[in-house]
Image (cartoon, rainbow, N blue to C red):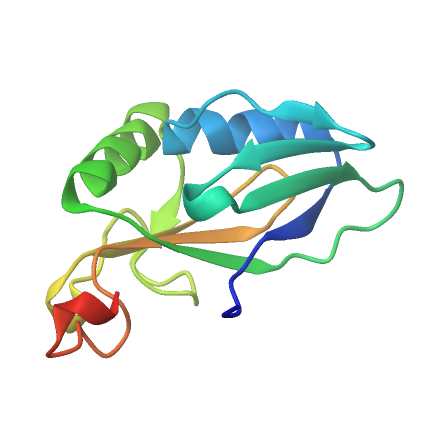
Length: 133
């Protein structure tokens, strides 16, 4: 059996607010209760399991490879909501996107301060043999 990503725990100031933020902006099904977590289903069976943290949340970075159509939809929701967003992880040139590796990308924060990133082309570009992805 190969190694594949299954889930990660995302600590949040308010797990419900963060899980709903994620499903709303990414256009995903509603989160579901999974023990003490609110699980958000991603591709290939992976989940983001949102957990309540009664203390300081240390922001993490979560990057997602999305289709051009998904980028348009997610970015449209970001702009429509007036969310601050940046073309790079250092918060430069607010309100713009990047065109790295021939694709598009943008960074924005969730309610707990986690930096979310969506990109349409993986870093370094697509492999010559597109069957790899």
